[in-house]
Image (cartoon, rainbow, N blue to C red; front, top):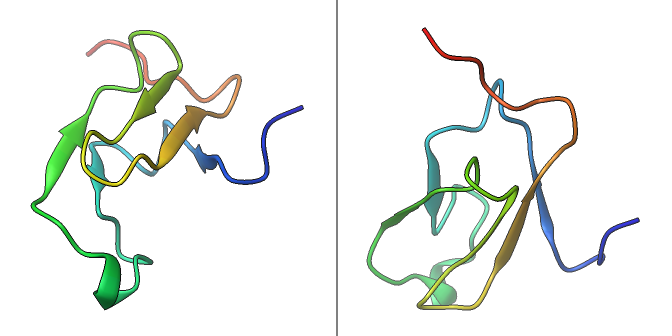
Length: 63
């Protein structure tokens, strides 16, 4: 179970992970940062504090 304030990330479709993302309201914009959610399954934006979690089973595979 995850926190309802955590953004769920699909590793097959949502990478590379950017914050702010396309759903961020304009009043909450900040400089774009790339977040590595693949290393631990979680990431937190250093600007706005948005938490992201990789959906289990969707981690990308090596090339």
